[in-house]
Image (tube, rainbow over all chains, first blue to last red):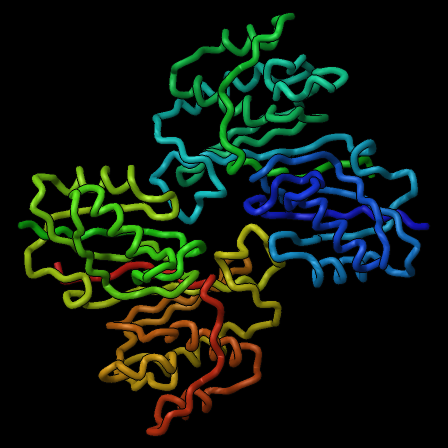
Length: 246
Length: 246
């Protein structure tokens, strides 16, 4: 038996999210359909984590075990000839049997894109359109409050009830603007469902002057549940990469 | 009565082309649905020309006549609040009654995008993927054969039978490469159906060394019908703008 690590990019528009579902089209479902086609029998895949409906990935990671006599390069070619056009396998390589895309990961990077210029119908599924004047400096300052280890229970989906804890660490947040597109780049040890979209939502409120930093402090420090209700659309969100120790 | 010139951009993915059709979704159909909603009765629109299914536009132009007491700016806002998210009106301005989006145009510009780098599922509907080594210099040299006035009957769709003549002038072709994307920019007094896609198709054949310039010369000079059968996909094609005398 060999274990393979796969880096995959996908266009989230026509998927109902990453996780396999009974009737709806999912990234994992599409991957496992192809794994079955290659092997002739069902083969499980283990993703680094889910992404929601409409969210894109530049470098999602999953692993699978196989006893076929195929190299990573051969698997890559087989995947890309059988996968639908909205998924693309960038890399397949053999790794130690102990490697698990989810449990071995040390950090993840996400990007969120906001268009503050004129609306562009060609980008409708790829950036979030925002038509208000934003104070970039104010957002950058406020974003620093999220750095480090925090309890993010007020910045995640209510469905996250099953989660053991809401403690996550954000290592870095970089916000920059180029040609009317503001890019919010996040790096952290893990992200709860909706966490990036809720943080960006609050930063936009602060950027336009409707909220100030105390809103973030209160939500991060509060022992009680007081969920933020500013959540931006899935379309602007990209899972950039998942990092592992070499 | 007032006459308005409208500049509109659209994402071609979910349209069956520009021209209004009975049952299929079209750009013109969507525009006239909104014109009717604004006026309370049917109002015709006159486009600069059609674009095919899957083709995008950054600056398509149409005009319509109205007796409503609305300014161009008010029409722009009304359009954009009523149009689907894959069309966006960039500008509406009052023009002389004699203006006609099609007959008044003096030139059009088209762009065709080819990705010669790694496949990107996020761009699947926006660039044409081409995985062969291309000789850019050879394509630039060959493209010069198309400049000036020619009979393009061998570089258009067979459905163009109704067209009075196939004589068109190409004023400029600019080919450049940036980050693995080759952009073919065309400017001419008019383009037949499939003309840009067939010219790009032949230039790619020449770029990879499968054809040489004689193929173009023969097709351009020949009195008989000898249609080129290299036509690239609609997804990489953009109507950039339509030009008028000021």
